[in-house]
Image 1 (cartoon, rainbow, N blue to C red):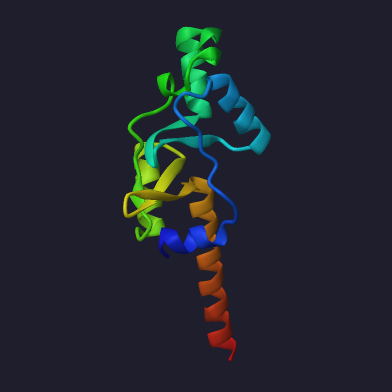
Image 2: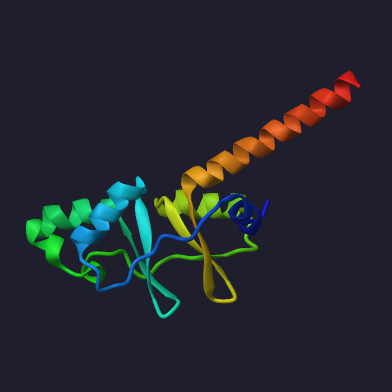
Length: 141
């Protein structure tokens, strides 16, 4: 299954932030939306990703002053991205190898989605369940 197919199931706009927004504002956004990360985008280009992990590491390293810094000082960069025609399995493998949980999805250089490892695991489980049901139907029919 391609990432484009998974993204079609998702509804709504991609939550994203500009590089000059404060870390405090991003923390508020993450908490309000109950999400773990957002892409940092400027002029259509994904510059990085701001995650809960980035906040924790920056707080430990630099203290509470980071809350008023622009997100571009704390975010993970450069963002690792994948093409929308990539398979879910290859994206899952990449995320597992590189030990991150969120991935911007691009088509022709523009971000078309932002996928989490949870989205990929759910898609994989759904596919396995469909295959199992097809086998059960074949055996009983």
